[in-house]
Length: 217
Ligand code: SAH
Image (cartoon, protein in one colour):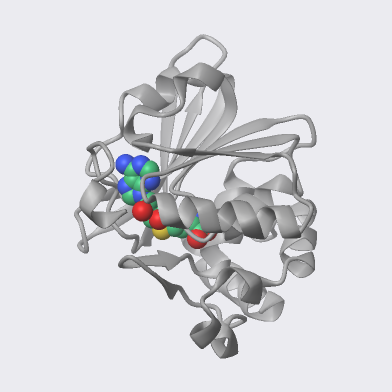
């Protein structure tokens, strides 16, 4: 899997401008058993460099994209990071090994609870989970040094840049549901102004903008 990630970094370097990923991120990917985060029927494919279904019409992201998005946050030891879209918990587990604290919001209760069990079994105790609508961020714990959104938004949810500390980074796929989407990096300057870069075309499940749907939970 690490070799596949490496190859894809090289293949996409002309788009992303990134030729090497952060070593702490690579180390965390090497130390994390992705098979623990996929349903039993998918374990045979756990180390393929592709997204996999995790139930509820949702997916665990492709390992290359997890590595790239984590790298783009420019993660460092003392940071506090907000994730929107806990899903399988794999992205949160990678982040938890490279930063101080991870806050992760998921709208589907069962996914969040399942992630809570997996993270506890791995001894990753620096992740806080919340069931709710991540479109509004998690204002009670703001500001964050970085925010990562793992579902595609049609526009940048206004609450998210507001919850970033000056100098913080927001990594978010923006585009049409199941259509063209671009991974964006938004850097909030020390003076509060935002600088946006378009990193790569991507494919994510949609970010819902609503309270959790009880029928689905
Ligand atoms: N980071 C995940 C990828 C999850 S897929 C992983 O590593 O596995 C995206 C997730 O975003 C789904 O679980 C979906 O339920 C969730 N999601 C979609 N809209 C949301 C919203 N408004 N608030 C919180 N979570 C949301």
